[in-house]
Each structure stands twice: as structure tokens, then as C-alpha cells.
Length: 74
Image (cartoon, rainbow, N blue to C red; front, top):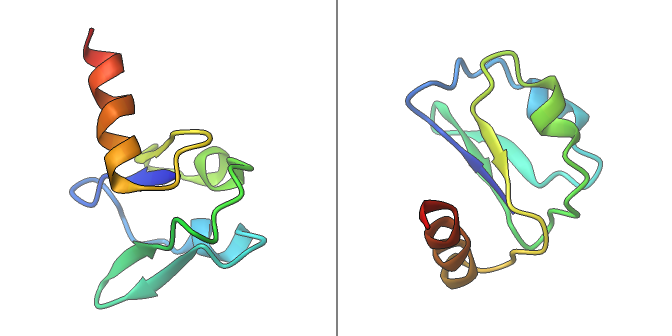
């Protein structure tokens, strides 16, 4: 699963243009993520010029995401 820091996102749409599964799209003046479509390839992370996309490999739900974020704080 990817997480986009919307405060720092410059909405260049580069991430959505390279995503092979359309897991990211431009909606409502910001980038929207579809975790169920994400295959953890991290191409979007590498192309983001603002460096605001974070990858959590293997995570597919918000509950799992919170658990992974908590692990990073320990």
C-alpha cells in the first residue's frame, strides 16, 4: 500500500501516469489511492519529484497500515 502526503504533493500526476494497475488517480484536486489495486511495485515512489509517497509493502488495509506505522515509531 502506498500513502501520499497530500500536504507536500505538487499534483504533477506522475505517479498515476506510471502506475501499471491504475492504483492512483487524480480526483478532486488531489491524488487518490486505491489500495486494492496496488501491487507494491514502488514505481510511483521512485518517480515522485516531491518525495511524498511512502510504500508499505504487503499492507492492504487501513488497520494493517496503522500497525506498520506503529512499528516504525518503536
